[in-house]
Every structure is written in structure tokens, then in C-alpha cells.
Image (cartoon, rainbow, N blue to C red; front, side, top):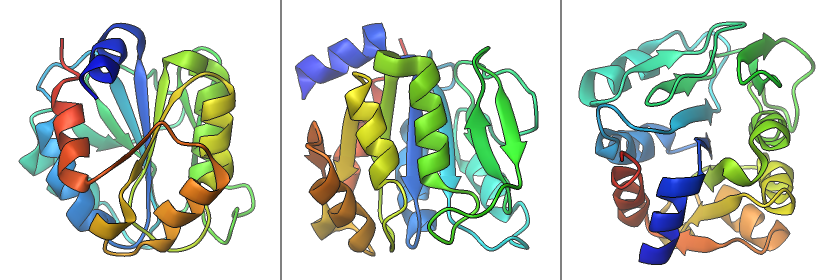
Length: 196
């Protein structure tokens, strides 16, 4: 793992995280590990209801050193900032490393969709992207993580034994030859190394 962390610190520019059921606890555990002025941007799709509001983003911003916010359409992606897809919108990465929001049809019954984020981010960042699948139900994210792997990015999945809901990480592990399967606290430790 230490060799991977050194590689991540020098090569990677962006981390995409996909999470569903159990995400509040998982994100609350790992995101406070991010440094205040990190060198990577973090993009998150958390499956939520369309009327969920901004409680998650406000909660995480209150407990994290790095700024956490809902993504806005057409805003540039800045290092050291955590962007969460707003409920009811797909969050996509554009070629100029900016974000766009979409109300296209749900994918795997989900909008925002993990696959939509991972596939668009991978096409832009390619080998400089890290894709992480955390706890949850369903299969959204497996195809996106496969795209990350095919484009040379680093792939990490939460150890299903440490997940509140293990179906999402198990689906990703079945679909992709992932680089690392890590317990939740090890993923937090990984994020803590992404600052310099």
C-alpha cells in the first residue's frame, strides 16, 4: 500500500467516490482525514432521494478540514475541494476539468449515478484518476470502475466485511480486477496521505 500511496501522491489529480446505503457513516469516517489544502480534488456521488436537500454536504463541511460543497453547473474543479453531486442530478466531468449537472434519465435507477460520474471523470483524467467504491446496495458503479481501470486509473473498493451494505462493493469486485480491497479505516488513511 505504501508504494501505491507514493504513486498516488505524485501522479493522481482526482478521486471519484461512489457510495449508496451506509454512505453517511462511511463518508463521515473517511473525509475528515483529507488535509486542509490537498493537491487532489474529490468528486462524490452518494445515492439520495431527489428531495434530500443539502444536509449531507453541510454536515461533511462542518467536520472536514477540506471544503465540502454541492457541485454547481460549469464550475471548475479545484484541488483540495470535495464536490458532492446534488440530489436529483447526474454530476459529470467536462474536458476542461469543470463540472456539469444533468437531468438525463437515471442509470440503474439512480440519479445521481456513480457510473455516469466515473465514466466521464475517467475519460478526462485517465491514469490520473482514483476510483473508490464504498458501501451500498445495487450495482451502480461497477461499469464506471471498470472504465477507470481500462483507462489506467487506480481502483479501490471497500472490503465488503466492513460495509454497512455489502452488495455494491461485492458487485464492483465481481466486475473489475480491482487494485485494492481495503477496510474503511485504511481508505481514510489513504486519503490522509493525499495532501502533499
